[in-house]
Length: 191
Image 1: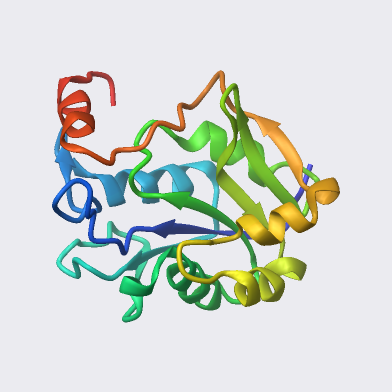
Image 2: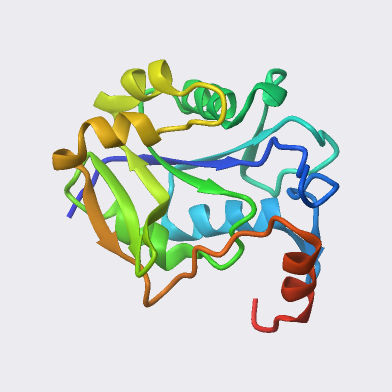
């Protein structure tokens, strides 16, 4: 079991174009999507948590979570990943997206306790978030994160090194993108 410190990184800078508004500040059951993702990381044992914001800077960071501003957020998620990785410093990093509210601490915990230095959660639909990026891979991921591509190309180029950690029994990678998705979230219970 890994014992190194791991930082948590929530990417929440986008404008939510398909939804018509930024998603990070959407409140459900008294908690923003951003706060929920931050809590999943801290509850899983991340030593520090960073929330990358851009389109909506009014979203508060929950206690213990550091706000990071990405002024280049319109250029894509790759810029948010680079800004977040820089903020996390020399720690291993677990990345979550704010718009995936059904991924909680158990999925994050499975990734941070793996021996791998690169890992993705695995679902019946395939690999997804959370994603673990070991400190030795941070510079490489940051160099390849461009536009709407985060760590995908880096991970694809090192497919043999990437551990796939089953999380389908504890999380759902569904993401909130449209008004219909928001209605689904508002009708859901148990978060």
